[in-house]
Length: 163
Image (cartoon, rainbow, N blue to C red; front, side):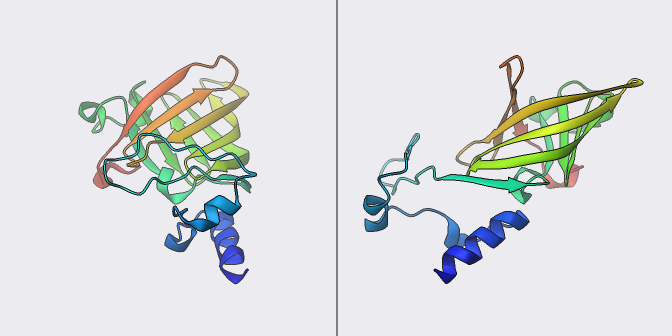
């Protein structure tokens, strides 16, 4: 019970705690009431289950924060000057000529979040719902515009280009 409270507390703070990661074990057999999805398991590796969380968040979890680009070649470009680069920092999502502030969010699973953003840019203001899904190796990010259903794919930029 104490470990569960620590995991929930860490999740609320957006902090990764190794003991919170799902591990294939007898406990999973007991938790069959919740749907578990395993995607692309590596050969000879213990599959990692996708665990439903549905935890309220008010900023990007630490693993999501940083600069993301359509390709590694785009990483050096400032997000303010390219449609191919986004930056996720705290509550802020920076796009080309606009920035959104997370007003409400939910960590749906250990790899997915959904959030509402208030955007400003080019003299206008608007609200948008966006989903994010992290790849297994945490090097790729898919951004989904909830209104149109369009997916945008990014790769993680090196840490020196984090903002």
